[in-house]
Image (cartoon, rainbow, N blue to C red; front, side, top):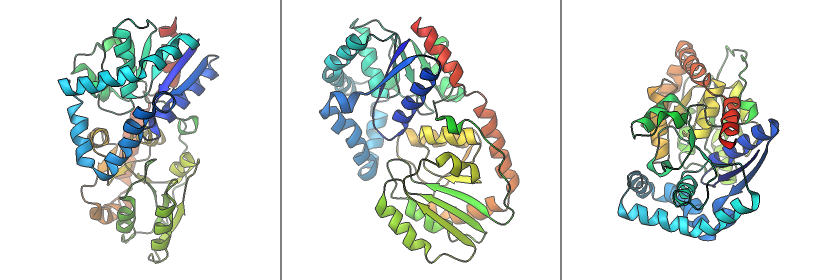
Length: 364
């Protein structure tokens, strides 16, 4: 079987999911090719979708939130934008399909799913399409009649699709594909002397991480704080400067980009981060409770709602409230254990093996 996997760079989650799926398929003896549909095929769409997304959520979050909601229900204006996007990518996508002649086409990005669905609706190709929903609440852009199957991150996600009339027979709650190192959770040795916090900004960075760090270091509990700043060197320098004056009860380790996130999660009691679909799934697999003091508008707000309602996370409405919450959690290990247990129960439904079997079935 040859699978053609389309992704798009709006944050790292879509691409990492594609890479994890490619690895799983190859491990099972299949071939998989990943294509970033925006970067490789359309400079215009790459600027608008990939780079434009980052600028909007950083500098005009309320406009992004408006657009996210506007595109969640079909209108003449949203239809025109998506139809034009399909026209821009049509020639390249059809060329890919003709060149590689895949048994299965896979998408990990909503806009690409929409475009592939449009082309298939118009009989431009007949290959089966599998779409991965990389957030926890469905968005209308994903939904096209000719998509053969959807893999989603939870039963909750499946229900949001059923509520919109999607056939239950094509929805499979097997979990968002994650890297192998996140699939095993080991019992860590409990540190009686300190409470370990993993603080992350996410792949696109976050202006709010500095505020969160300042709130956390005001806590009275004995803390170990690992701060991951990613490729944001300026943020790393700022946090390092602030950490020079922390109280004696606080130990801080500031790092930049790292491929050791799994190990860092393994040693932490909680993770403080924004609720991207992939990061959240990785934390659930590691059974590490999530504290959410900041979100990007749109899908991350909805992810946060799902996570909190499911007992997997706590949303902090005001970053300053992190101080008291950290002390409460450090002194309430039973709450941590309760949340970890809920995460373990949720993670039991994740199955990359079932996902590979679904791919094989669709391709046959």
